[in-house]
Amino acid sequence: VGGRETQRPDTPTMASLGMLASRKLWAGHGSMRLRFMSVMVDKGGLKIDSRLVKVVKEDIAPGTGIDPEHFWSAFGKIVLENAPRNKALLDKRDAMQLKIDEYHTPRKPIEMPEYKKFLTDIGYLVAEGAPFKVETANVDPEIASIAGPQLVCPVDNPRFILNAANARWGSMMDALYGTDAVSEEGGATRSKEYNPVRGQKVIDETHAYLDEFCPFAGVAYKHVTAFSVEGGRLLANGNVLLSTPSQFVGYNGSASNPSSVLLCQNGLHFELLFDRKSAVGKTHPAGLKDVSVESALSAIADCEDSVAAVDAEDKVNVYATWTGLMKGDLKAGMGGGKVRTMNPD
Image 1 (cartoon, helix red, strand yellow):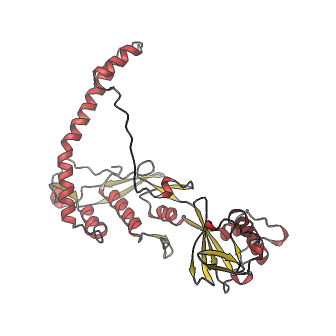
Image 2 (cartoon, helix red, strand yellow):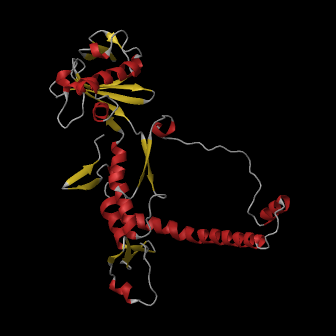
Image 3 (tube, one colour):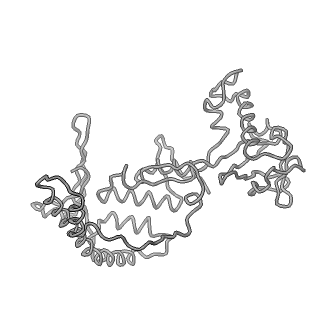
């Protein structure tokens, strides 16, 4: 009951039947799911739920170069080697807790020197060791050195995980056009159809952002009619450099007529996208159709606070979701035949 797989000692035939049944019982406004014992398979000296065996073989192992049988063999050795050690540690903790409970049972006032000696005598407190340092390596700059937004989402929800991954980049113009960041005064109302008055306000606001964070030396973005790259430097109108040339990171397309330009400020990137044939680009003097802004740099895939993965069915979902995230092929149904996927790199 409650999502935990249990084996009733008075029903031994469940194991031989190898049945997995799931029934959801509705009571008032709540529900309770009953799960019965599933098929268990011998792997590496362990009893493994067949659904876990399947997800490792069909979803996780392919592409890693690791044979599933080798994985289970190695995993079994780790478990069998460390299970007695873990039990010994848990027994030690229980013994300590029993002594602490007995100490507090009389509810006598605590004398700190005496109490500290007691905790030391039972091994709960130990002498402070010598100073030491812990060094890390190969940590992505998004975690180690760049300050930026971070999302938290449950690892058992593919849709939320996809939202977090895809939030790495966002459209500045869409954000400005669709929110109250831009006023609706002067006919710049939000509507289902594209409003060119509001569109111009969005372009003006975008120019203001770029002038503030990635300015050119001597020309405002609203006066730029062409971008080009020469000698590894970004030029506006053929001869104007960025005020800080090192903000130019790279480009796509041709040097004389790039399809996109990547700029960087304080470790966060702006990608200027050009297309003179697009609805927005054909109204812009330089063909700018959008600015893609680096947004949520990282995400915590929460495995604890908002997740209850207690049985094989839950864990298969978690492992499959994480595998899809790592391989880049994670999908989530959105209803109505729509499917959400990860944005390309």
